[in-house]
Image 1 (tube, rainbow, N blue to C red):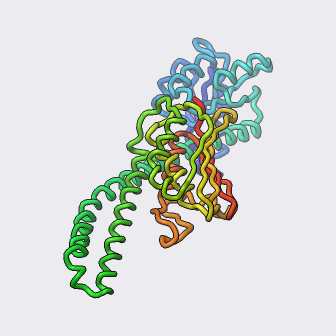
Image 2: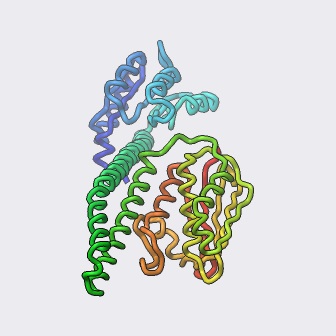
Image 3: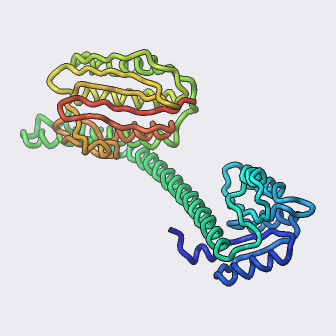
Amino acid sequence: MIADEAILDAKLLVVDDEPANVELLEEMLADAGYRNVRSLTDPRRVEEAYREWRPHLVALDLNMPHMDGFQVMEQLRAIDGEDGYLPVLVLTAYQDREIRYRALRAGARDFLTKPFDLMEVLLRIRSLLEVRLLYDQTLSLNAQLTESNADLERFAFVASHDLQEPLRSVTRYVQMLDKRYSDALDEKGVGYIGRAVEGTKRMQALILSLLDYARVGSRGEMFTLTDVDAVVDGAASDLSARIDEVGAEVTRDALPRILADQGQLAQLLQNLIGNAIKFCGDDAPTVHVSAEQQDDAWVFAVADNGIGIEPEYGEQIFEIFQRLHGRGSYDGTGIGLAICRKIVQRHGGRIWVDSQPGEGATFRFTIPRR
């Protein structure tokens, strides 16, 4: 809800060539507590006044000399563009439907019929202002969210990049200790060095994953027509060593060509196929990639016969650093599915999972058809 003070502080511009109508509306609005009301009787001055003052609402007569209300609305739309939102409240004595339809097409949001009714005036103006102020709030919050996400991406990229050099030094010296002095240490000391080596490897993997996560938004490539068949085959080829090691089988249907960032699509599919192979049960992993057209999007599916997921964790797994299993059970950084979601969102789609424990999992994501 919008606070009353915000509504009463909103800027209203009244445009009517009849001074009596202007005075009546000004008096009504002042008595209701509105503090920022301006008026014009010459429609030729509206464009300049609008650019200078940027009112939240314009109450506009249709039948005026020099310029009618339709021409004024055309000027205002040209200033704001197609994506702008300006509530125009049309003041008219006309009851003709065609005139009202024409006004709506020109940008009118509502109508006030002359002679004015006080309660109707106040209710219609308040309703339009609530929508306008909510629209402004949404734009502001979206801008803040976009900036926050950009800040987070910059921080993750810089922090990860700057951490790599000191980590390389630590890794190098720990490996030197292991190579040169392990014979001089007792079993406990050798164990400590082994843990340090493994810890640096995990940290290196985590930093590289953070860099991948940050790059999704800040280092993406242009969308091009992409052969998803070739992308899936390439992902399977990159995973061939692991596929051969566990005896996995990766199959696919005939897949479409879509507009996408080919590198990110490859990363997305490789992550999903790699997870399907990693989280396998007792049987050899089988992974199948398919796609179907639904309305204005392609819905892709990566299905496996693995250990499955509790439905209650279906959202949590896409959060960064979320792991359902300890490091002793399965390797990984807890960032892979967060990267997948970020890639899908950059393409204008969404991602989700259908699964039950012990029954495998099907990860689905959408890519809009362009």
